Image (tube, rainbow, N blue to C red; front, side, top):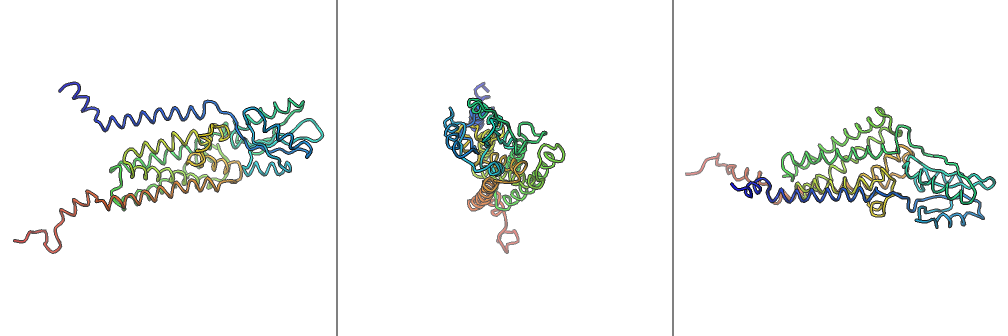
Length: 354
């Protein structure tokens, strides 16, 4: 056998196509992570301004005209209203101008992302210094001392996502990449649901009672974890039912390559480039990270939209998995066809009439 023949035997055309696909995922991984995270800068950060009426609009205009457009300022009626909007996650920070002294107050929420809170402090310190004023910073939703840079929520959600698509991949490829019938698809869905509940509770135990990395409701985080795992797992099962083994790569593309860098984990959404900022909230890692931070630091506020996003991924993934299994049955399950052909006709007792 020649060397060329050995190569053909060692690397089949199908394997070569899969390797090319893996190379594409590798390059997309580099492009997505580096593209999203190599130069974070705040852009259009929702920001409140509390100031005397005679200077309020002038200050808003000045902040709106800062080079690079880091802030999207709007007037807020009072300091109490500014705090409430921050806790509701309507704005990311606020400047309260002192009408008498020369020291203003900057409200931030490092629980929503330490990098963004630090950037706001730098921006407003420079703005006030240009007006011969100073600023003191008040953190109204501080990140836990055990939650360095507010990253624990993100890593928790990433762990849940990894578990979701790995479990789904194992369930699917253990006996073929496509579900052969509705019963098998239903069993896999049930197994995925059970795994999701256990995974959600396990993650909440580790992040809370064991490590003390995140405050907030234990059962809130556990429920979120179950939903994240199930959403990712069922999406993966649906993709594998639709495309076979390629579905694993598609799941990695959606969840890992597109979803993780756009989740607002390492840097909150206002610090990401436009493309990643746009897709992040619509993908499971981004929706999950937002909800985890809301549960931990914002009294569970502003979670309806992200929870609907996760629920949509779970519902569509489940529906597609079950519908595609019905399609496979309609088209003919090879195993069932063989069994039917081999079975004796009713009333023959397995023998052939003479």
